Image (tube, rainbow over all chains, first blue to last red; front, side, top):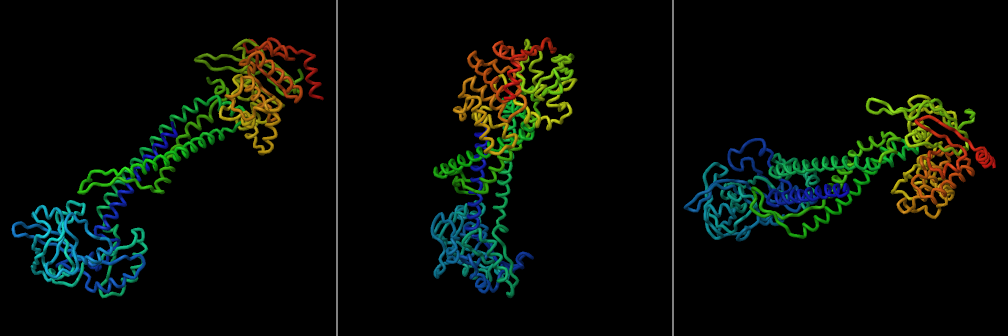
Length: 389
Length: 244
């Protein structure tokens, strides 16, 4: 019974923790692939003061900065970006947008392609029409579709109002409703023409693996010194506020679950072990009568509880992982969570640290639970214990 | 009885058990001496104090007053850990209900006292084999208690009680749960071990079959000795066997 309870606790922690780990990984990678990148390089002034005009604190000699860091290990690509804002109009309705100008080829090289609901991605060499991608929310509110035209109005780097006509080539679903309602994406040359500047806001760096972020950041530091502008670098985690909020929230929930499992195992085990002690009173009395030192009895109970914990953890690890494999194979999907517009796959990751942690948790719970019964057993009066029925 | 040669000396021992607002006197100012190599029965009706006396001699209970000496050592002056050591080294126990550890095999049950003494693996194996051979259960060494008959279980209990070569074997109603055939075999076994190994056997019983083979019988009533009879021939037999 204790074995099953401990196994259930471990399996539960593995499944919940494995699902949370999948969610964190998915959110992390989608945050990065949605355009955040692994590292972003900025003009240091960008974080020291507010811009008076767009690209006021942009990077002017960005090609040189890019060439300085491109050769570092693990770098898959570097994409210059301009972040800007303004108004969109179709002649009938107007809407505020948050724009992003990109080098489509550089973005694609790093798998930073937007998730298209309709149409196609931007191309670098469009000579006839200026291409644009809009979010699903923008398309819906302005009643536009692929092939329709829009006018973008923004303020140039000098503070003047400027506008260009664009043709919608694709509709994007970022997965974030608030972003879809304001999303606009055009090519870098188009934005530079609109904003009347050859600067970029930042350089987004894509790596082969997210795990290499810290190492590459360390390698970049000397390469960003001695440039005409002082540069600064941000890791993806520094810019992923939403990811951090979600992770903090769910880590708290997981901690709470862990505490519940710990106390459940502790309380139930104390009860079970006390009952076992009662059942074994005569046996303990016999052992004490034969001269067994009382600390041995304490050690015996604690050892038995610890072994039960280890076996229970093994049962939980096997059971939890098998259930996880079955759930992963089932192709289960969850409804879209708040703030997202797409269904979420239900997957359970097999996280070694989680397996070790949950096993240690239940073994420690059982060892602690055994202290009270063990001490009671060791203090039994031998004559009374031998007469116990 | 000359107490200077005694392996067990019970001096004016009283044992009272508190019960509600009163106290029950289980043993009342009892004095007794038991020599090395004796085969002694403590007999008496239920509630006469037989088991209490065995518990006190076995150092698993303490007298309310008086003292008990084991090989000259005053047990009332020993600390709990010293008492454990004394039990471990000098006393073997046989219980009415056998009290074998159910998850251990017969050999493991017999080995347990040696494990507590910290003997080496090879020495333990040798002594377990010898003890099981003494009780005629070598072929049942790997059986768990639930696969043994009542008589076999009690013989395993005796092997466990003698395996660490104690000075005294205490047996509380050892034949009470056995049929006549097994009881007789057990009595013969205990007597053989008493004579061949010179072990001092002290047991409580009201089993007449056992009493017939007992050279010395101490009868208790209401916590007092009412008779202490010694069959001279039997005692001489014991001494002769010990010398030989």
